[in-house]
Image (tube, rainbow, N blue to C red; front, side, top):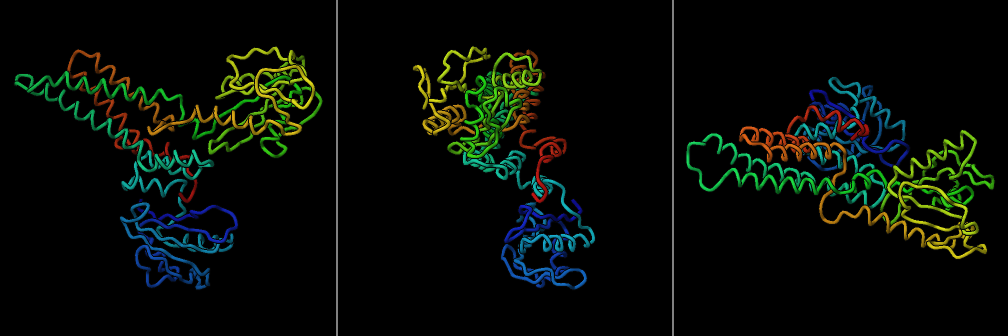
Length: 432
C-alpha cells in the first residue's frame, strides 16, 4: 500500500458530475500538484480550478480532503467532483498519472485497502459490492443489512462463545490435577451443542439469501404454440422472444429480468416440449427440461383450447399451471386462465408469481447466507464441532474447537485474510 491509487469512482459515461478518488500517502501532494491550495479543511467541499502539469486549466471542481484515518480507506483520501464529460475525466486521470508514486487503482482496491486498514470486515466489503449491484428493493435491503454488520455480528458472536467454551476445555487440560468448580467439560460441550445447532439452522435456509442476491429463476415450459414466448414478451413489455405460429420456433433459453414487488425474478422462455426428429429442436427440449429441473420454480403454460395436448413428464410438479387463450372457446380448465393476446388475467398471474417468490425468499429478522464462501466455511465449522463432541481425548476436543473458530474467523477476515482478499475482490469494479 505504498502506492497512491486513483480512479473514477462514479459510473462511466457522460454525466453531470463525475467523482475521481485518490487514496494513499501522496493524496495531499496530488491536491497541491493540481493547483488546490490551500488544501480544504477535512470533509468540507471547496470549489477550486484544477490545473494540469503544463499549467492548463482542467476544470472547475468541488474538492474534498479526508485525512487518515477518518476516510473510506483509512488512508489520506482526496476526491475531485468534476464535470462528467469524457475529455474532462481523461485529462484529470492523465494528470494524476504523472505524479510520482501514483498509479491507477485495480478493481476493488479502494475497498480492499479499507479492509486491510480495519475499516470493514470481509462480509461488509462483500455487502458493499451487493449494494452497488442491487437492482431491486429486496436486494438493497438485504445488502444494506449485511453492510450494517448483521452477518458479522452473528458469526463473531458464535466465535466469541466458542472461545469461552474452549477456555473451559483448555483449563480442564492444563489443571487436570486441580479442583475446578462445576464440570467445565460438560458446560463447554453444552455450549458447543447449542452453537452447532444454530449454525445448522442457519445453513438450512433453502439458499434464500443467495437466490435473492442472484435472482429467482422461474422457468416457463409447455407444449409448442401454447404462448410461452408471447407471455415472456408481455411481461417484459418488449419483444425479447420470437413469436411465430410455426411450432418449434424457440430453440434456446431466453431470459428476461423482472422486478416483482422488489424481488428479482429471472423469467426463462424455453423450447416447446414435444417429441421431435429435429436434432436442434430436440436439444432445445433437453435444455428446457434441464432448466426446469435446475431452476427455482416452474410455470407450466398450456393451451386452453387443447386441454389434452400436453403429456410431458417433469421431475417435480410445477409451482403454477396457467391456461392461455382464455379469450377463445374452451373446456373448463383447473388453474389460472389468462389471455396473452388481450392481457386479461396477466395482473392476477403476476400476483400469484409474486406470492411464490415472496414465500420462498422471505427472510424475517434473521440475517441469511448470501455467498457460497460463507456456506462452505460454516459447514466446515459445524463438522468440526460435531467431531469435537464425538472425540474422547480433551486435546482432540480442543483442536476441533480451534478449527471451528478458525473457519468462523475466515468469513469475516479475522484469520487468513491475505488468502481471501483475491477471492473476495476479484469481481469488484474499478473505482470501488
